[in-house]
Length: 75
Image (tube, rainbow, N blue to C red; front, side, top):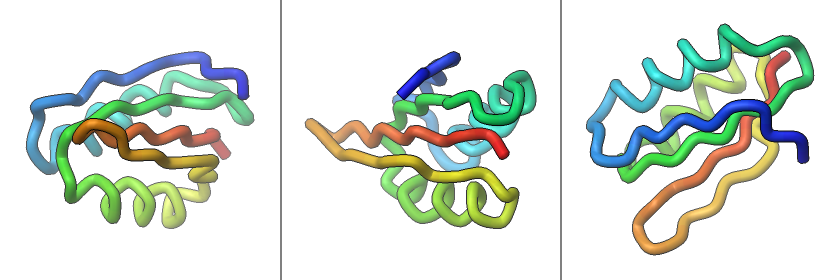
């Protein structure tokens, strides 16, 4: 997986992790992957739903030690 940019949204509450993710993905070109780190449990549903609605692909998601990590490929 070719991660081009990483967003650190740990410690931020909803909707800031989504806001930072959207801003970062707007800077990428189609096919590039964004990695997002957040501690907001609501992001599990929010980022997955946003990616689907926006046409982006949620490549993978994992949770480890209270940190959610998402990999989103820009459409």
